[in-house]
Image 1 (cartoon, rainbow, N blue to C red):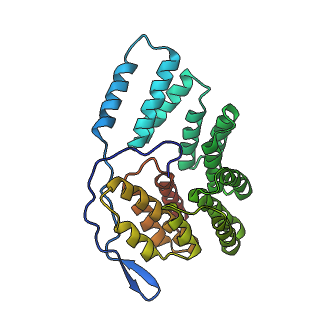
Image 2 (cartoon, rainbow, N blue to C red):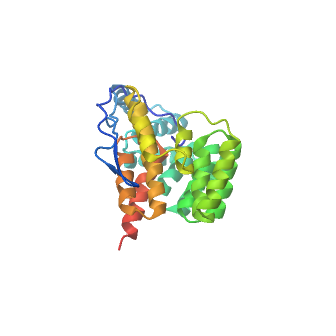
Length: 292
């Protein structure tokens, strides 16, 4: 799931999907987990970057035009996982044109990834002051508040985000994650089941909801993914999501070793633009910090 932009197109055939799962009693063990070919930079992306570099070298650009180019190059760097270069571009864009809600939004995501929650709240607040209808800023602020342990405020943002589109499974999932940590598993599952019953539940994301509701096993979820067609990009995206949300479940259950392995798998496909990839690294850092 992207935070506000569409994923890039990558033209790779998938590798053969290896063996799926072996079940021993109630414990699942992987022989080889389903994998996709990690997404790579495309020729189009590299050419686009080169063209932006050429344009930025001109001396006749207005500040607004230069700010837009830095923003576009920042998005390109971000999509390729070059976060430090992206942040430099976003900061340069803001210095030229300070009233850009989208730039504050993505900088807030970066602050969240780095665990700088107060700075993230301020960035998202700036986004919403400039554009109070910016739905993704409210969602991203809710996630930042969740990671900052401010569950009541996180719930307010994510509930508002959910109410804007009750048929989006990811909005249900993030609301569930907050409610689970805040109110407990039983109440969170009851609310999740009720929201699903009131939604038009069709599409891939609802399988993740069913996994949390206990209606779809881990084995069934990964088997369905591994049996999909030859769209490697789609497979990489869905595996990124599946491994992240499975990791969240194991982490909540106290199985940190399996959670760590799954967060690493979530990052393995290089789906840099997805929030699941972004926050898998944050989760790994938090788990490492909490280890004795």
